[in-house]
Image (tube, rainbow, N blue to C red):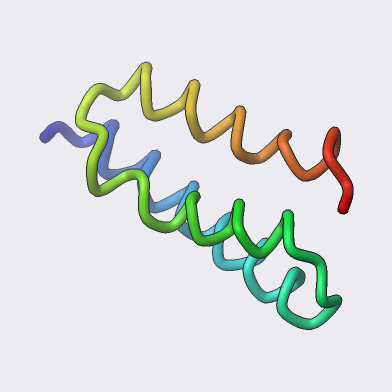
Length: 67
């Protein structure tokens, strides 16, 4: 594990926490699930480029699919 993956994991974990809190308060399932995924997936992905790609996709997912 390198420093870049640690920093990106922390960034996406913080964004995931924000999505989780927003989804819980609003009762919206998509931000809630994306928030959980953003907080959990950095533990399983070691490559920094893949970490950024998956994180960016999960951050954009609630914008395109609103239900």
